[in-house]
Length: 525
Image (tube, rainbow, N blue to C red; front, side):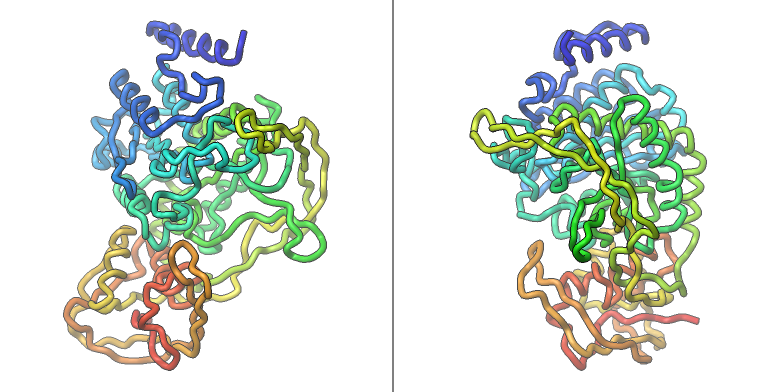
């Protein structure tokens, strides 16, 4: 019996056990399954799959949550015991909310396929107990425009799908996983609105690796910014990740581990380096929103089918764990929202931090095959592994800190800043007309990157804060830090933040040596 036939038989058996009729062949197979994993789903395929799922089950609600740059509606399946797909219904349920996202990079398509398969399993009655504790928000195709730009040479040596896949950036040429702070894309603004309105407790972002030839079928990461609430990091590193890793090993014989690449960037000795701590990345951004966020990276050189299944198994184990720990998840999130950061010392910049001792990393190998249509080389995971011991650089240490003020005073003529803050869900209020003591950041120098990155020349400011008194003008706004998004607000508005509005060049025409950064700090007591 083929793998496809086994899956169909299993699906039919589940439906039969639930009292439902066995499905006709291909009724709820993904395009990847229908083509023996030669192709990946188009935008139309995904929308059709989700709409048919919603039509067949009262617990599946189809909706959209925004638009792409080219005007494609972003599809969302809301799954659970709720009246409808609206944020109001989801939040009124009182249940834990989990957001599952695929295809932020549209050449990394395993998450898109895995989430459709998960939706099919839910439709078949599997994991019915999850409804007791949670509502799922399933968004398989975030970068919908990039998904439609299929090319046989996208993703280079990745092992399939041989029928091609989409591109990494969106239609504007932006990497959507670098846009969570600046919100230059309609996709990023749409998902920021989703985070504000549905307010998920847990979020999972599904990717495929580049680079190192290791022996892990999938690697993962928690939020990496040093300002992430400590309980979120502990929940993931001490609880969820060890549990999931053990379950995958026992059930499937596969190894999962923390995301990394073997690199000598720290010197002559290789180290296992994770990616970036900055909140421009999805899971780091969500960590600053006080949410439990998880990144997954299926191994690029495993077969397309194995990557999809590795991703599906990972999501299943995550959902099983958070279901069993739903009360703890809700408490962690509530405590993080209540733990206001005003007056705290938080990180503005950070560097990778070396582990206390070397760790054993499972390295692997690949064999080379020719793409059947282009003749270009593809790499296939070899079923071998060996251990290399190296230091791990999986956390970050602050190199610059700042004290969180009571509020920020944002001038009326910085309307774009005010609009972007509101798009993040940060509360603003009129500043009034009473004179107030503030701190102004006096700029000593500005370093501007010579080359643009993601459409902007990043800037680094040097200077110092000086006391000052001002009388707010009409239209000036206050953003207070005693709100749940205080950590995010601090990173967005501090002049020396390595991922804030100043860094992204939004204020470039106002940043000159000897002058003051236009957003003022209200220090408070």
